[in-house]
Length: 582
Ligand code: GLC
Image 1: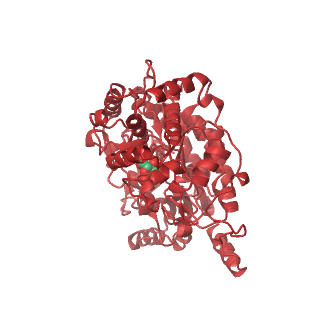
Image 2: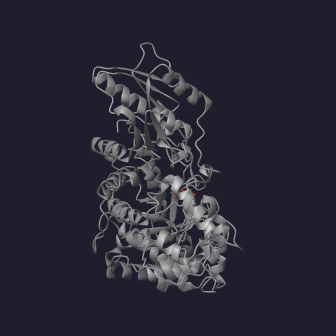
Image 3: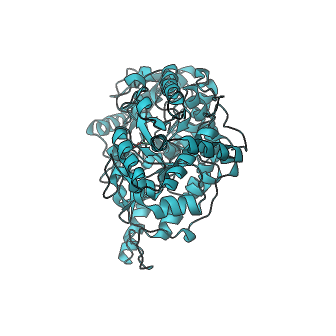
């Protein structure tokens, strides 16, 4: 597939139309969107109600400017404590990739619920009494939480091509997020990765916009349920976030947070298709991408965030920024960016910059740099989400039932997802399936390595420092195969460097990429460089007449060259998560 892509790109260049051609035919500003060209969509009317809007009207009348501006700011738990909310009436709190309750990334669900409760309590009993909204990156299951069900990353789910299963995964993930007392996840990612050198390729479902759109609907409905008029979300449901708006997967050379130098036509046809689907399905939030379009940072592009997303696509929920992403807008800093609010951002993700953002935004509101109507519209959108989540009024929806986490049916679903995500690329002489009773060796660096099979965004941001005890419900690939072989009367040996006593008839060699997240995964090319040790291991096994099955763990398709040629069978397993049983 990739070889064809390379050939296609070559042909395009020879034909004089470089794949990154910018369409200036309109002669206008190539970063100003023309909403009439974009697909129409509409948040369901059930996202709000007359009663909710009336209640928000009353709140807006009562709130001070300080309280309104506070609503527009989100801080990270590593930089704020609950009592700070008495002085700074912030609207939202997040736990970013490397943050955990009370400084512990391995905190239990009960500890997460306790922390959220503390922030909620202070916010409800101070200022305008508006509770904070708490968000987290549960991007392949509730992947911050030891014991949670960790599903394959999105690239594997895309390979499964099963939208019904995606909705079930959304339901299970929402239940586990709710089980830890949290009501908002920054998922699904609707990127359509074009250049797989991008370190976040695995967070995209597919390079095919049609599949991404189908999955956007399925995951949004799985996480939130179908919005119902006059009803708050079920306690086991959470707010979804369609992210990162947009063309995060379309940047030149696949550079994370880079620039998508493409025509508006390509921007629409390739990168926008997931958003109408998610919006029509009722997505309560959209996150703006760090990246830019033809040189203009999205966090400052009003034609996209307001005219297209809120106008043409009728999005009625809240638009949240990415991690100090507003600071990348020319003339802005992490501590100050009225331009982002004027472009249509509603909620600054200001993890450690929230105090400065509060002061600068308050000043901008006071001197009219940000119009009162814009402030009120942003507050309204944020309050709509809080009402829909059952956070407002006296009857706060109770989340925090740890029994919802790591249940047998969720684990079974994850195992099904793993099995459906695997891509068999080679199987000479039917070496697979391995016969019952066989003597099997499981070798290679990934044989018994949960970090390699789970990838980034697992317990920690990069997923590189995890330990076996972080995954009480998981099995490595080696453990799982070994159990299966032994149960069938065979002999199994797990040995990363391929040592064995009785000669095996088949060796499963698990190799691949080490975990990474975001720009840490950006690569100069797609060549997989098998380590000399792995090459030698495979050659040694082959020289003894042992047939070799390679299981390849990666966040993206790669050129595996000699490795796939040496193998008798080859399985692309992507990043399957904790259920090695699959
Ligand atoms: C990160 C990511 C975004 C994530 C956010 C909060 O930088 O770009 O996907 O939701 O910050 O962790």
